[in-house]
Image (cartoon, rainbow, N blue to C red; front, side):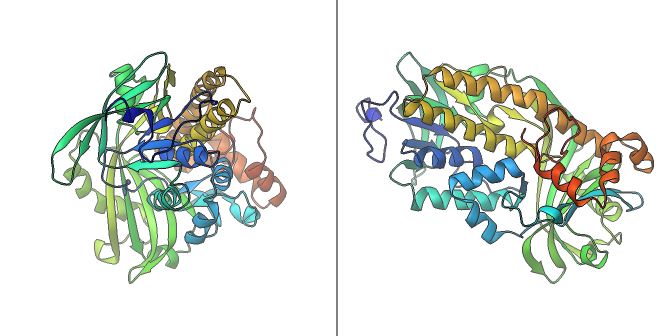
Length: 438
């Protein structure tokens, strides 16, 4: 792309000279990138989204999102579409022993099932399709989506930021072009090229030895055993979350998501898969044989808790997994990304409309990083330890959070307050991160 072309977005939108910046380049068409593009478009701020893949991500990832994320989805105008395709609510979230299957304690979510801000439930790959549709059908004047555009380097000066992009053509021939924008925002996930360009391999934090296996499963034994909602499984070998997913049904039963950690270290992907039969035998109600359930899709992930040292470097920003990652137990990962881009959109819109000066962008970077380290990282680690390092036989006596939930059982008023009212000083609040602002 020539320098002349670089002064205009690919959709032909011309900058407004009276505004403090002209356009934004978003790297990554994941949940953070598409949601940010939508939020900016609703305030008439143009953006170009560059995605290295030829499609949005279809892997099995997040499925439920708490009150703060629900409010952002509503603000972005996508909540009604999400609700129409999802189950209406979870009846409860509970903690069980893998060894005995015993229900230890739980949270009665029926007390907020009619609340407009209740938890949102839909697999992330399906939410991405909704976001993609909104970008194309409602905001095409402001959002340009470019797939097969892989960012390989970024640069900046006092006036603009540039991205060097490798473009894959239908003929298989790749070419290199340069995009220029007022700001570049890295929403390109845990393997972020933008982050690596800024910080190389420096990404403080920890990668855990355990491997996470995520699969969609049809199995009648869940309904036959009276299971519903979300079920956290406590064990030192196989631990995780088993939760009902969507409206789909098959000959083998309703669709559920089985996410579990395998504490065995340093195995190959094939070796972890071979252990799945044993894991399901121990974790699923009825201790089924493979002939009794159907696995529709499986993905494997490493588990990390990491955060960059800065979420802004000049004209380049990081958001979501490009900036920070955490283990998935508690639902903090995607919700943190949603809150990142909501905060960044607010700051960019305020600056664009002359309601704040550019220093507001520093506030985004500092505050969202602080919230991750102070709340999300710490609480997600506690959630992981609760299911993987706790003795289920004594958990109600040794874990203060589970004891707190046990004491609330049967008290609808206290449960509703717990789920919907933010109490910043109470560290034990909302292990799932569904209802409390991070």
